[in-house]
Length: 297
Image 1 (tube, rainbow, N blue to C red):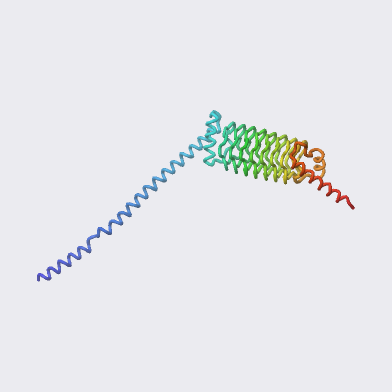
Image 2: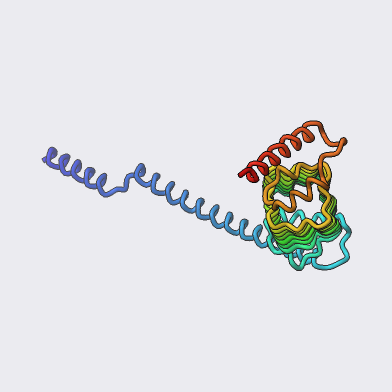
């Protein structure tokens, strides 16, 4: 009888053990739920923080742009607003007043200022590689030694702009106006300058190697001592242009009548380099020989 009672007690203990929840199995579930709650709280807080920062940034941009659309700020304040908007990737500038900004030596590579009015600004030494300045007005500004290589300046105006030693290599200056600009020793290597407007501009000592000036207006333009090898002058207006001591004979696109006039008007002077004088003699000799061959029956 005692053995039967003992057996029944063991069965009851086993049943109790089976019905009791195991503590070891509950702990992982609780920990997982706690982790989900914490992750959710962090995600919500991060979203709220980024949303607030985004709204604050948008408000700052709007305030900076509004400030640039109204007179009253000092030149330093206006420059700060411009740099803030440029750093934020602002692309709309048509209403902004950007005159008289002093941005000397600033890195503005890739900046986008289409149809902006940047007159009388100081951009000397500025790095604007690949900048997009299409349709912008940079009249009366100073871009001495600025880097505008690969920049896009289609239809831009640079009236009486200082472009001393400015780098325009591979730049797009199609239909741009550089009237009366001072571009001495500027680099226009492989620049696209078709239909550009350059009357009375000073390009003394400039490098126009491989530049495309087809259809450009070079009336009364000073091209003394310029490098014109492989430059395209097809259809350019050259009335009263000064090619003294430039290697115009290495350019392309000049017709026979223009070449005959240039031979008489712009042979290398004693001030020209010896190598350029020698190159002209070699070219002229070949030209005379070629003409004589065509005349020989």
